[in-house]
Image (cartoon, rainbow, N blue to C red):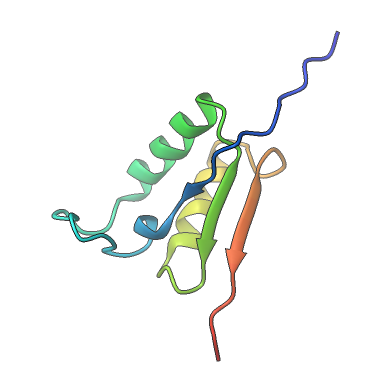
Length: 85
């Protein structure tokens, strides 16, 4: 019997993955290792949707590497917004 994963009702925002985002952010940008761990934990909790944007610094790069390292590229949905011209 093949198990099918249900889509999560939650979407993880990734603005802090690539920039010093957030009013309470006292530590600056997250490391790649931290981003990968967050994505791993999110996936483990059933989150399979990630929101990012070109305006989020290197967020798309950090998220992409984490997804590739965790072999999740084909298993998740990524919502990415384009920068305004």
